[in-house]
Image (cartoon, rainbow, N blue to C red):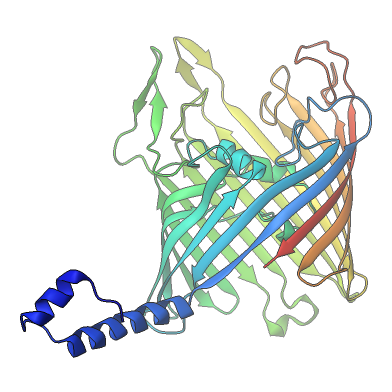
Length: 407
């Protein structure tokens, strides 16, 4: 036992006894150890190597974390460290979760959630307190910073069927600061709803509105963002469809940064995963939509903008170690949605991924992706300066290796 000088002085004066100090210190240490014993540490190191066929890499619209800076080379993608104390079965259960990111993808995540990071290559993905109240089957709450309620794909690449993210992922909100409540009505149906400061990150941002005479003003106090999610899961009695799931969600609100429009933004999402009668075979699909209303900025009218994307997924667990995943996509939107500001955008994409488990705790996969610019006019993929008539390709083809160690 190590005592400070103040404690020793009090003991010498007879104010406290060393025995009581020792007991108090042991009790405090026991409380700390008990709290830490229920906290889990996990995470991963994500790396990749990508080779792009054809002309240069300067323009790769639609890519979330494997864009121009990742092509034709080896990459550290991201390091993630998670601390979590999950909810237990108690009626008044409490816990927390913290997800910290480091690396180039953390910087990209910050760009997706303006103002959401604390340094260029560092980010807080999630940091929330988790609570359960004894209402019916248990009403769960999150308060703090948390991931978007919906989306077929995750920031964590290893959770997705493919290494590269979809066009739909790019237009979904990524992060909210607020509170959300979730409740399981029955084994096959659950709902969630929440309120956040803004439609998307950053952390602790406050919503703003554009003014007709230029600039931006804070939104009124009641102008928060609202979200909801419905989840249906087929029960045991569904037979071959057991485990099939359907998600439907919506988010509506204002952003905290000052985008070109600074008006109400609304996202809708519908996604489903269905097992097939063939062992190991499953199909999935998703539809993502984002739109905002028109506004006036600096005395100029800015029209409304939209983006939508539909994707189909086919997954086959061929053997214990080998899994094949295929994704087909169609996406369209206003100019600038995915990075082509000079014209409206329309894309088709095909992504085929071979996942083979060679080592324990390691995701090892190879992926081929083909993107096609469907809109008329100058093509958008490839090198050259960002001018209307720069030499570019209408197709982008790439081959990627993705290695992730999970701990």
